[in-house]
Length: 172
Image (cartoon, rainbow, N blue to C red):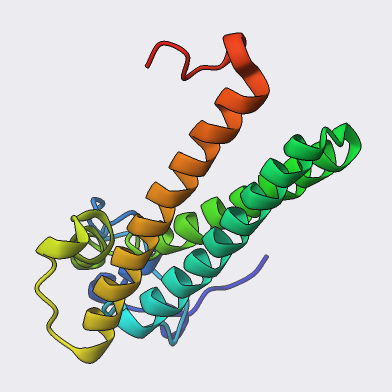
């Protein structure tokens, strides 16, 4: 039988919040591992900017691949078209993963959630940057928004050209 000593425990006040959902309250009998601090670092805007830049790079690749798919469709090269669409799907998955990584940063605490809401989910023109990194975030988000609009238009044209009467845009 193992004997537990009081020195192996910490007070309930030092329960790290990062081990609990931000909505949970520390329970007086749940004690953390030694040496873990309760203080949470706020969301680092530079990290958010890096993840957004990564997402932007993936979106640029999606735009390029959409253009290549249109060229393959014009040449009526079904093999290339299928391959390019597969590559485009992989890039879209990477883009989605980058966005999910950003959203995960907001799950650390209520303050982090609010910061992510403000920097990532608000329209880019409504962000009031408080630092150079936040200004970069607003700029990258604006570029992402315009790039997504370009990709949507390319996709609409490609879909109409390839799908003809079966296109999802036919009703427009």
